[in-house]
Image (cartoon, one colour):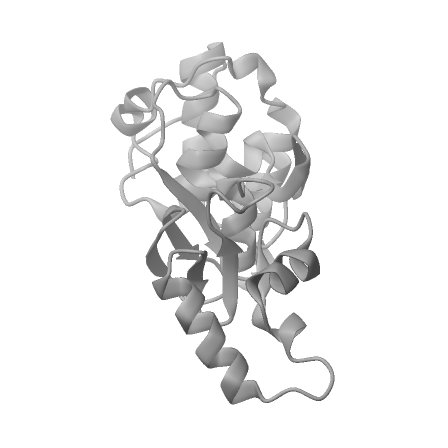
Length: 212
C-alpha cells in the first residue's frame, strides 16, 4: 500500500486502527511491516498496538487528547484533574490526561502526550457524557463525578485540608443535589464525609464533617 492510499482510507479520522487495512485479500504480515516503516519514517504515530495517528504535516486534524484517551482504553472516560481543569473548577493547567477505567491502571507516554488511567469498579462507571471538542468528541465525567472520582481514588482526600488544597473555583457549576446523589452510589463513608466537608467549605452548610 502507498502512503497516499492510507491517507485516503483514513480520511478525516484523527485516529485509526490497523484493522481498517486488513479488509479484503491482504497479507497481515506485509501490512504490519508497512506500518512499522511509516512509523520509523515519522509519517504516522503508533499510540499502542494496533492504534495509530497520522503525523504532521500529513494529518488533517490534530487529535484532541481526550479523544486519544478514549481510544487508548475502552470503557474509560476523562475524569479527575483533567475533567476538573476542563470545566474550570481548578486553576491548574493539567499536562497529563487522566481517565478512569474498568481496565487495568496504566500510564502511557505517546507522541501525542502522556495518559494516565485509574481503575474503578464496573458499578462506578457512570456520571459521564459525550462532550463536543470542536469537530471531535469524547466521553468526559460530569463536574460532580470528576470531583467524586478524585476523592474516591486519592488517599486522604476526605480531609478538610485536602479539599481546601484543591482550590476549587467556579463551584456554581456544581449541582449540589447531583453531587449528593452520585456520592451515595459509592456507598463509602469516605465519600459521604468528603461531600459534607466540601459543602461546608464552599457553601457554609452544616453537615457534620470530621477527618476520617
